[in-house]
Length: 254
Image (cartoon, rainbow, N blue to C red; front, side):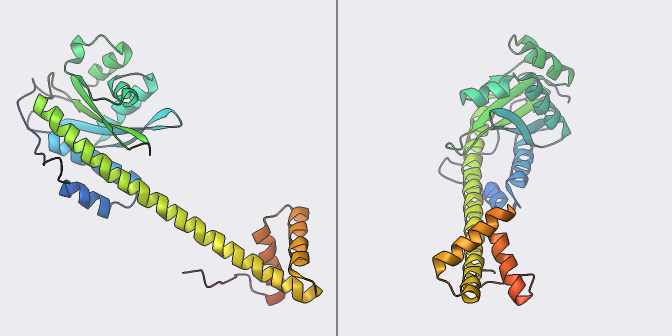
């Protein structure tokens, strides 16, 4: 990671009310959340980089109270994120925990997080900008930006990075909610299919034993308990024993 003194530059931003079309494309084209975050890191780095000052970008999220480097624009950014997480301290983790933008303009003059700062400098980093992603309680994440230049981020860069992070967070919240809805739909579909298989088995037991529904359900649950097997598995076995079919098809399947 190399660079000279930070040169004046400005990231092309849009008005706060306007959604970045590049981020809209990421939402539509990304296969999953992991792919979206990887593309987001690459986009952030490319937007901020200029000749003589290459920016490296990573995304760290807090999972079970532990930071995890989940995406990066390149190997250098990933290594820097993982190093910081290994030390358990640094500007990006501080920004994540405090939920506020944090700039370290010159690591050589920084007295905080000394073990990490010393290691980051050995990797060619001279300045760091960390911008939290406001996910409204869905998760906690931070956009980490690294420069090989001292004073590598101008005030215009900071404002533009915060605008970009705000729009990126909105896009990420949308993806998270779409993912949650998809999981809920799959869970509901599985539950409906299981219920159908169980109902079919109860009907078969009623016919074979000439008993009512409650008695048939009791027979099924007792068998499930005795075999230490899931109720749906026992129900499927009942139907298979009658029909000879290993696969049970229902109208809920697509």
